[in-house]
Length: 141
Image 1 (tube, helix red, strand yellow):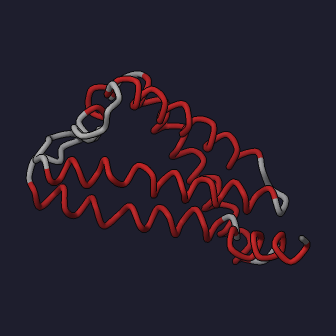
Image 2 (image 1 turned 45 degrees about the vertical axis):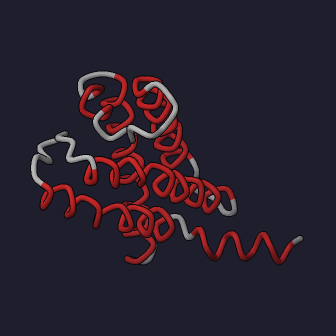
């Protein structure tokens, strides 16, 4: 195995473990903290959103840890990236509405947090080789 391949696989495992931890936290110890990220304009119960996103994170984390062959691996990466994009409005709302959560108790800290979401999207795409896998699938059809 090449060093690049080993690093990619390690990145996938770390991302999967991160999502399992985040999903577990959504459902248990940090549930109220995550509720601070639910936008006030979203017409859904904040607790429902937190529980649902926690379940999705658990599923994505498990999928990242269990899926090693293309094209499934790339599809999991793409879905994970889309999930990170879908929850980004919650981070923006936390900033715009000046909501504290996870130690983000200043606008500066909340703004810095916003910079990390695109990195999560890129991480999911990179470690799963999602873009080449999706291109390959497209060529097959």
